[in-house]
Image 1 (spheres, rainbow, N blue to C red):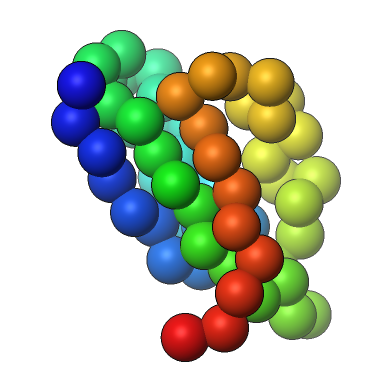
Image 2: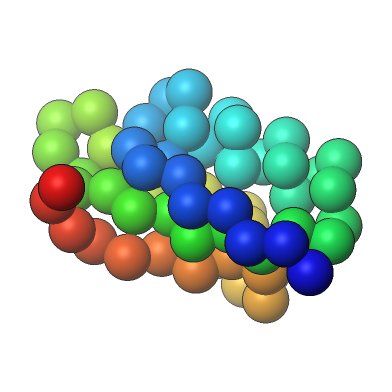
Length: 61
């Protein structure tokens, strides 16, 4: 299993990237790191929230 860190993953582009990777590459685990400001919204990732390969961390770089 490969690990992938996605910063800004709750935004429009990041969330679409997360969906793409989880769909296209079943051997990847994703950690999404986002500050959840005006652009980041966890609703963008709601449908992958229960995927065991997905993990979310709220934080600021």
